[in-house]
Length: 447
Figure: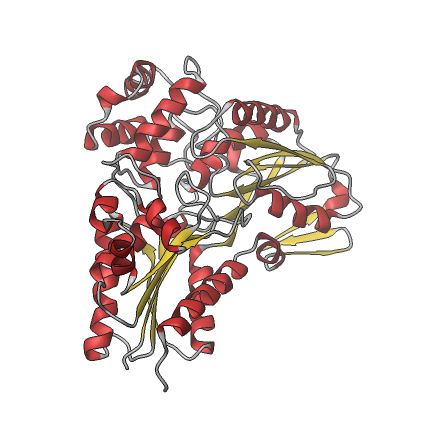
């Protein structure tokens, strides 16, 4: 098989990423699991006779919620329905009867609280002869904040900032969020009952754990206040959390605040859940695209977690190994991984986990002429920036130094954005209206 040039691989990396992205577009994802025949709507293993319900509601939250709602509206067609969803600012779609509230992410804001309150009211208004669709995708935890009794939005905002900076995983962050909320951790399902509930989910969580995606508003919560407090101790963040939050968790551990609904609770008797899209689908689509472009492929994992810099070095080392020995896969090679890494913030720069991944990997592959690494978020947003991620190669650090930038210093200050911006290597997609975590590619070709 002929070798690939550096230019070829950079172009191919972008094309492979786009193929992965297309595979998890909410519209096709929902239609792969839902179809309508007359008054019957088939969702996975369930059949809903739309003519038998007094009212139909559509509620939901997440970066992909608008695109999901648009497809569901098309499926419902002539049926009467109403609804409300919350999305990240600018993550919009034209909808007919479902109202959209734009809200803050990753730090929640007043709009998110307003949307959550209205959604909870809709859920409580649903009766035993009603059908409620709930659309859930990544970002929902921040976009649907409803503080528990005695807590404020300011408390939740401060807690979110601490969790985002301490290196906690999404599982750990959402375990705490669920136990500070009046709507997450199954509380929304409790409000919907006794209406029938159908939740469609686009997963942004490693392992597709239903109770972690958007903090599981419509599924049983196996976690406890004790679990949440254990995470606080693990990261030694008690002194950084608002006093009201620490007291709330302490009261929960003492049994003074009711636990979230658990498996077996009556409120889940009429609830059905279906994952319509996940990182695994994105990774497999990327693999197919890479093979079509002539690469030997190896999927490392769709469950990749850990500190971003450490994971990046492993990917970089594997790229260099391909050039030296042709292992673990023959050249031209494309290694693919998904999942979501974490960054422990120590500097004050701009960037996100994907840009930091690309920069750390660039330092590891410095001088490796024919290696390209791309890391990007499928939601189009990497950290608090307008970039989805970045692309790097064996020449990235040399180019950076030539324009007076110190790659090591930028990495130390969590400041990858300005470096890749200067080099023209940011990956900017704009809002993709989907979210299934990250996609990482390592392309390597031996001369």
